[in-house]
Image (cartoon, rainbow, N blue to C red; front, side, top):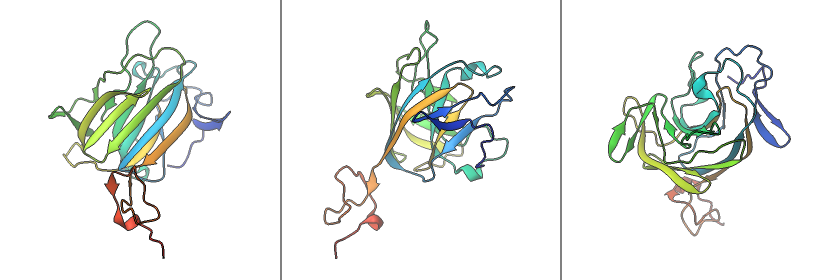
Amino acid sequence: MNADPRQTFRVEDSLLKVRYDNYGEYDAVFGHIFYEEPYSYYRLQVEYRFTGSQIEGGPAWAWRNNGIMFHSQPAQTMQRDQDFPNSIEFQLLGGDGENDRSNGNVCTPGTHIVQDGLLITEHCTSSNGPTHQGDQWVTAELVAYGDSLIQHKLNGEIVMEYTEPQLDDGTLLERGYIALQSESHPTDFRSVRILNLKGCMNPDASNYKTYYIKDDPDRCIYPE
């Protein structure tokens, strides 16, 4: 917690980079960089690309693989040997130059989702997302409406949606933390933007926003 001795996550050239040049032999250690506040209703947009070669010894499934973990447990509640937080993952994948590989899938460490009225317990479910080849920049957007609707978008197009994110025991996940991953392949993020959709919906308040969709009366600020 709060330690990154090999500088896996770093800011260089105005990019947030995930790198492995300080690792030596890869020892199957995954990492996450968490945002400090939890969110429930929001839009999250990241611009990312895969670059370079996977570190030697990285698992085959993690080649050009990263992800946005959301509705996550707090970082401080993870166990020492816990690879991934209990969360929902917006999976980011790159192509091999020849074969199709759907991007924008969902994976569910310690969790489940509901899709088309069915409880999905498989670890990963494929989206309708296209294959993104090479080192191109891709815009991924997550739309989260609490536990009522989740959408994955790639370059502005919806590639997957589902409802009722929940822990394995059935507890619905209405909110949680957001984290970006390190899974053994170098990745660049050139922007990470979040728009909170929960706030004061009273037009008389000075901090009223027309784009809010979930009311939070406690946040209202009124002119004196």
